[in-house]
Image 1 (cartoon, rainbow, N blue to C red):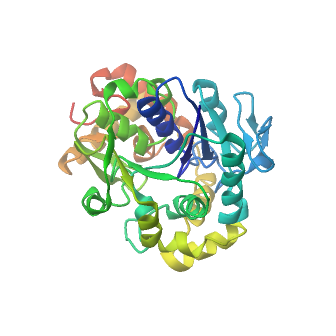
Image 2 (cartoon, rainbow, N blue to C red):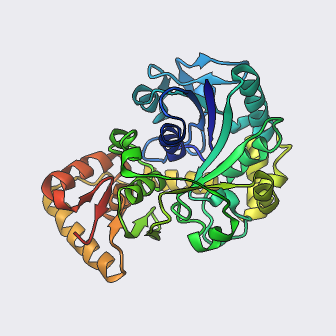
Image 3 (cartoon, rainbow, N blue to C red):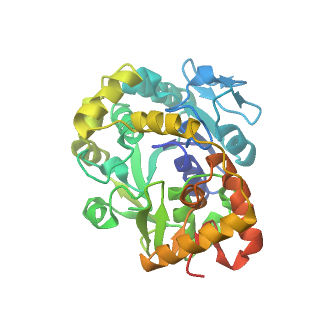
Length: 362
């Protein structure tokens, strides 16, 4: 029996999809996880998502859908977490390619549904920004979710929309999301996290890291992203709720606008018009800025001096946790140094490691 899970925003949503599959369906069913190759700039220095043409070694599934096996490689200078994910997960990772707009994703979904005849189809979003209207001042990345939502509502098959970890992406607060959430489907536990625990040791996702941390019992306020957004870690963090797909589309003005788009550029133009920005423009600007920054050596003496200052300031702001991605940027290090920084900190101050987060208050 095959289950199809669409990772709404790519990145960590694909990791959360694997945890969801294990929690809801167990080991007997097979999962195909349809996900973007759209990684943080610390993984992929090129802005925006990667299409099939940016990989070597993909395997055809249908006419417009390719799977990403462990042996696949992004073509330099592109980067991707998907081949390593494929090596560590028992599932098939299928590449969601948005370069032909919502129409192209709809076509991919229709082909997969016809080819797989899945027992169920879940559209999973960690955080809940898929329910954004488009004018929220805290909204950062509406385009990826809007594209998958626009496509899913046009497929002639029953698709269940699931929101995990309401508010954990730092874009829409749990208070604003609470009235929109339907039935509680599952509450992740520490045991559920074990299925992806080793992946969270290296994967840069912040929202899924906080989802796992709350399932393991972490509570407080976590500072994330380059902007230092404060995200509450509460008892609601590990929850997975069902949301009516039609209600989500009715709320999401960007998803409604891009339903007939045939290119990513066209969808991006709608994002600028409706939301006032495009997250790919932000990535373009940041990539150009990062390229101009000289490398900073990672020396333990400087790191711990800066870390102590950062932690003192963070505690004064009421922050209890942060991610290693945010720490890397807060200490003015290059994204490529994240893993080295993480290893240095865990080895030196293991009592601060509240896996997979850094505990500032420890």
